[in-house]
Image (cartoon, rainbow, N blue to C red; front, side):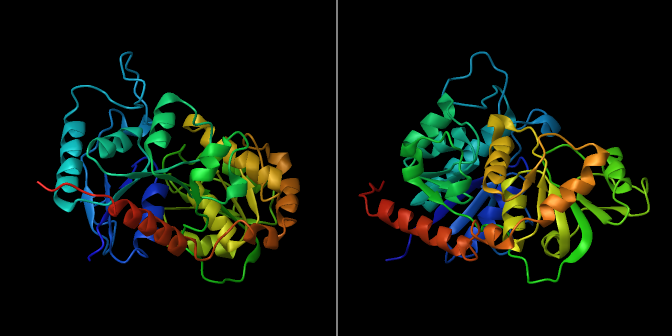
Length: 352
């Protein structure tokens, strides 16, 4: 009997959702189709459904709308939006044609609800932070299982035991770095999609305060020649994972993608969490600090703090970082999701 397909919905704010979906899909024996916005040409050999954009203000999108009459079980349901109408139609058309055994939702309370209404079991991706609002509670309640892309010890202290029990913890979903010899006095700053753009003045002040270090900043922002001679802005690069592996110290926010890659590369990390809905990054940063896995700064440090912070980061034990990583995490996650799908697929399904 041919195994039934699995749908994997990815949110389009930031890029971590797409990256972990592709890591899992590549190890799922061709069963996964990825659905999301902006996927055309960005999934390799993995099939995808590229959905119309549903955003009102793409640069300021936080996954919630301001409607006073939005149903309590939803985060984002603006009315009279053609992009939403068309994306819902494409999702349900694919479900009707493919008859998936499972839909992984990373993340959207609305798509989770839609999949259940379309008679498809769901696995909901549960991120860090305080997600005890009504839409999250209902998405969790309706899911067959939950998936968290991090080690269980990085979970928020306030997470109820019932949710922990139902969660598949899946560290190691990021791109795996090849072994590299770090450059001891090289700092790599990483600025991802979905957050604040590069603030040239902040990085310039940090580099000026540490003249014995070489600073390279990659990511979302214009390349700039401003700053001291030991600072370079490289913009988007195609080898970010390799650069992380070579860095003496990595500086960045607390997104799951960057945290996972830093742990996989066993690199010292100075973490400056950014504001996100549900305090997602601040929750993750608090756990990293409690475990001694990163030097965490609640706000951007003043210039004079950087020499001490770099010394503290270099004292982090690489073996400790390894304990929160899984070199075959993507394969394990794929196997678990396929098993959930196969178990769900044993239930009787009525045919037209």
